Length: 408
Image (cartoon, rainbow, N blue to C red; front, side):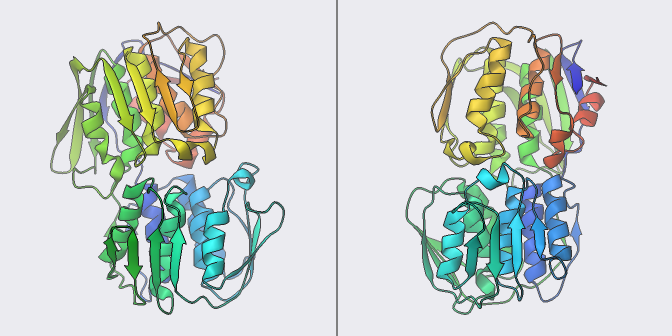
């Protein structure tokens, strides 16, 4: 358990965020698919990335692979292992076995893979048996996890005939697919994406040294802190306006929520400003990870909000919309949710919670709620270690910025 408090309700400092795990995880797969291995500088230390690193280091000798709660690791490893010689079983945590994998499995079996469900159809654990894959035209729904699509795209250059991927419905989290393709392009892969068709022919990755930029998704919590503070000034190195990460849209969104972003040569500076809109309506289909910090920010500012395009939050580490609704009720914040949106319809007076905040084994729950410490005396979270999945130094960085964090 950990208790945080911000007595002055101000925040300042220089925060060196974790490197982007989205970029890191893609680079790990690309490096393994390269004939000439390359160095990755500033690789993320997030748990997800450490798990994927271990899988890629051990897969030649380890046939039973535990992905724990790392969804990205399981999805990327599944396609990667399907291209390799050998048989494997991929499993994970209890929650991982509740997260659907069938769209990716169906696509891989269409390419020739032999993949069997060991318990419940459509869900891990799964067995991969050695079969030669052959590229072809695939049809996939755009409203499945973008990681399914990215997983297929990264192996496409290694397949005879490549892959022609037709996306047959609205694409969710499109910037993550674009990130995958742009990273592949950095390593010599040619592709085309016209309308709803992505084409990648058989070709070779060309290795080169790569530096990972820091994590824009993690920056969302600092935007929220600054927005809810009495005064705030936070510098974050290694973030750029021309980022590969779609979540860099934060600078535009939070300009409406009282935060100014100054782009320096090698950093951004966040400062508190007075101008805040009275209501916010956003479609976050392309940026679902921003949904929780933004709704908490709006609650803390006392403004109405309607955030839609959040369907994929149902199958994350927790059922995020249900969980954030439950935990915000402890602050006297009432929200309305359905399967793809969350709303705050009136200004509500925030109260000190009388019980601890449950983290639901989901790293983004405590980090999204923590900025409310700018509005009340203190917040106690029942699991301080859950943040290790994406941002291991979160509590340490809060102390750097002037927020007390006490283990209890």
